[in-house]
Each structure stands twice: as structure tokens, then as C-alpha cells.
Length: 438
Image 1 (spheres, rainbow, N blue to C red):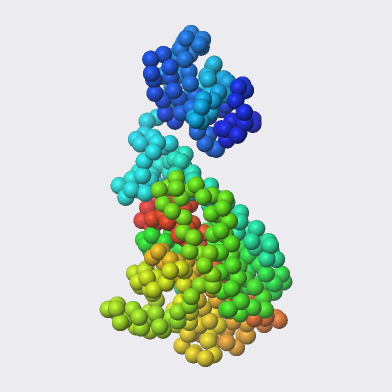
Image 2 (spheres, one colour):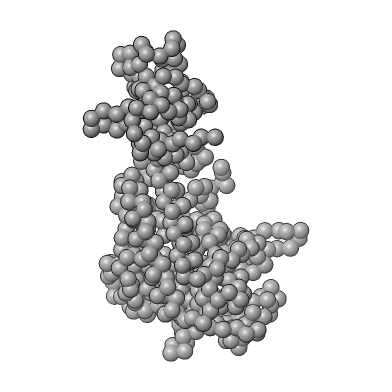
């Protein structure tokens, strides 16, 4: 088992012997000296191999070993004034030779965000995971998800594992990915909200971080067919309670990710967005948003959903993320409360990211009385749908006021790192109109 990494070598003293399993990223020759850039999961170091100081044939072996091959270098760590540590190589063993060609090489320095590279990188994602920029994004993702879990635990939430197969979609059947299970039509989960709603009446504060699936096609930079959701739900809470909770989560994770991973955005050629630390975020009603858009020439009426261009125009009004509150009942699903002060709208708010990145997450106060739930089920044509019987039963057995939120992990990462598309924020993207490969 490997127990020495390149980061360890950079952190330790010089003049020590090491044996390092790694990959050969680049190589250059100057006379009888071969300089090899080798990498592992923690960084890069240079190996220096001098023909006159090694066994016969080793120099030639190192010179002809294909780039991207897995090798093991043995030698002494040395350092020079004002230069990084390097390894004076005594021997080299080829663990796994690279026997196929690819251009550009996975670990080479190229623009992974260039539109002309998109199809090639996606078709070969299993190899381009080795690219330093993709690695940086996925390392950031790992830290972000770890910090989100810590925040939930600190705030007394319990994690609930919800099923991926569900009999009920949140919206209409066509918006979900259907699956046939022994003749029964079920769906890949769009949202675990119904299951968290059941669990919140046992544990009061619950969350889930898992995959969600979208059947309704969208090819925008913030949509995937398969993505990961951060979902949270609180008992005895209203919309304002959840808004404050989410603002604290966004500010905390933004700050900690900046403190732990400041080098990631620089490695990508971007700058990390720190706007999420400026809480509380401003609020704008949906009705005011529509009025502003209409004054600026947008063809929109009350009751129509905001699209990406609408959100981008509205984001110019604010230096930070902002809430759009009071989303019309006609476009929101049935579980969410109607606003008693204006029955045209729901007690729902969407958080729109800064820098024109669009909707980041949604927050909702959920219905807790069976009478209102039945009205909303009837509006959506689901009151007689037997599949929702268990959802109704949750509201007939000591149901309490509760509130929830849901945020896509990939949208959060895209916004924080200022990268072009959510497909760059997940290891193996599943995109509309592309084969499920690899």
C-alpha cells in the first residue's frame, strides 16, 4: 500500500530516501539529464535522472516510457536555493505503461471549459478525471459536501436516507424519469421532500444529500438529467425561519470553502465568488420582479415562471444573491402553503445567485392541514390519485407547520467557482441528448 505522497515530500526535510508510486506527466531532456514531472493525487514534483549516475539502460527506459504511465521512482529528495524540492532518481520501475494515445493528454494544461473541447472531454470523462482542473473542482466538491454535512450536524439535523425509486413525482409524471419495475410504473426521485416530510414528524430537523433525476428536458448551463440535491426540513418552522437557516448555511459554507480551498479557483483561471457571505440577502416579491421585467421590455405576465434571462436581468439590481418571494400558486406544486394575505401566491421563495448564475435554491413553507392540502391536490388534478394516499396520511396524523429547502450541489459549486456549466461540477455528467456514457 502506498504510504508516501508528493505533498508529504514537499512538507518534509531534504536528503531523505523515498520510493514514490506516481504517474509520468511530462518529460524533457538536456544532454545526459532527464527531467520528469511526476504527479499523484496530492501534487507534482520533478524527478531528475542523470545518465552517468544510474544503472545501464535505465536512462533509455525512462526516455521511452510513454507519458501517463504509472511508475515508481526511488531516489533522494534534494533541494536547491529558492527552488522546490525534487527527487534525484536512482531507479525507476514501470508499474503500468500507457498503451493508448490521446490528445490532449489528460493531465496536460488545456482549457477544459473551451466549447470545442466539451464533447471530447465528456466522451472520455473516465480518463479526463485525471486532469488537474477537473481534479480541483471535484476536490472542492468533496470539501463542500463535507462542510454542508458538518453544518447540518452542528445545527441538530439528522440525516435521512430517502429512496431513489418512488411511486410519486413532485410535478407531473412527464417531468420525472419513469422506470418499469415488474410491470409497476415508478419514478427515479425528483425530490425527497415527501420522505423528509414524513421523517420530520419523528426527528424535527432532517436532511438528505443524494441524487435526483429530471425527465423534463432542459439544456441550460444549470440543468442536468442526474444531479445531487441538498434537502433540509424543519418542524415547527415557517418560511422566514427557513430563509434565515439557509442564509446561514450559504454564508458558512462559502467562508469555510474559501478558507480551506483558496487555490482552486486560481487553478481554474477564475475567482471564487464570496457574495454569499453578505447576509441577510435582499428580497424582492415575484410581482415586483415581473413589473421590473415588463418595464424593461420583457414579455412576461403574472403567473409565468422566470427564465434564466429574466433572472440574469434581475440580478443586476443586487450586489449579492437575492430572494424572489411569493411565487404564484399556479406554477408551484401542491405541498406548499398559500399566502393568506394574497391567495394568488405561495409561501415560497427562490434564491437567485449573483453574477447572472440564475436560481440557486428554493425555500417553502409547507401545508400542514389536510383541508388545504386537499384543495391544492384538487387544483393539480391529484386528489383522486391513490399514489398520494400516504402523503395525505402524513397530514392526518399530528402534522405540524414545517418548512423545507432544496439546492442543487452542482449549481452551488458552479456559482462559487464561477465555472460555465454544472456539468463541470460532477464526476460523470448525465446530459440531455447525450448517450449515457461512460
